Image 1 (cartoon, rainbow, N blue to C red):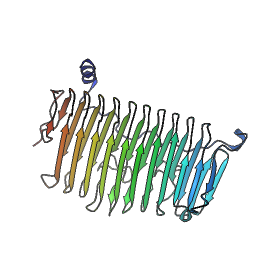
Image 2: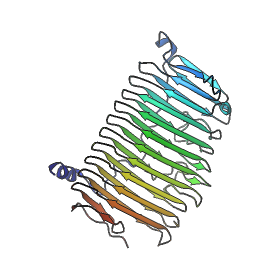
Image 3: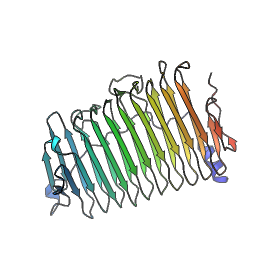
Image 4: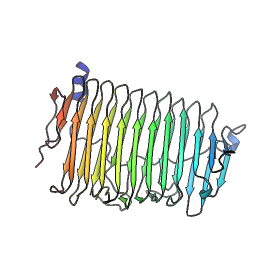
Length: 352
């Protein structure tokens, strides 16, 4: 109870901790001369030739992947090892980085038209994985995903960090699945472009053990470079599932844009004392469907949910805040039903 009050006093309604993008992670690989021998091996799978196997050792490894479908090339650079092949001949990249503090980056040099599957096992240690559609050579230039990108990330012991950065998706699909493992892990997910055509985007991230922080922002369009937000066309869909895991976690999500298609969001605090902050704004002209579920689950949780619907009733909005078991506090908009809460904090936003 005392800890819950301390967390309530630290909470500042209306404050946005992150309004934009952090500095893009620039891929880098150590020069061969800095190693006595290669510590990363990169080979084609002898059983499946379209699969590339990237294996680290028990040292701190760095792996950088760059895909340029316009030139039909894909490059993979490890500590002391390089791989270069036509992009169309590589369907899957499997990365196992084992021990110590590893870094893996993936970037696009042109629009993605050749589907890829990335399977990343970070291993133990404080590891970092950056999956980005940002062109590493050009500032604030995001390449469009026009085909499929399926990414799975598995953490282990240590404070792991997963960062994703995407621009527009044009009838392609992006799937991000992550189990971040034990340790105080971090998700920073940024979306900077519209979902058009039959685009499909899905995130399913589980912080698992540790005091995790999971963030998803889709408010600023850096592709069109305007303040219109992230629009979702009639045949497109965005689905987010963020799970805190077994300890005291924080889940924060922001979306703003014109919604013609589907938006589904679930924040699941799971065990222990979690905080969630969910803020969705449907801009005027929206006529799609939004489904929002925020659950504190076990423990003494603090839950904030605001869904601003500026569609004039044209959009179908369904939202629920559920504190779950424990002694929970809430601050929700008047259009968001809430159950299993014990105390109100801050101000309730009354919507027409």
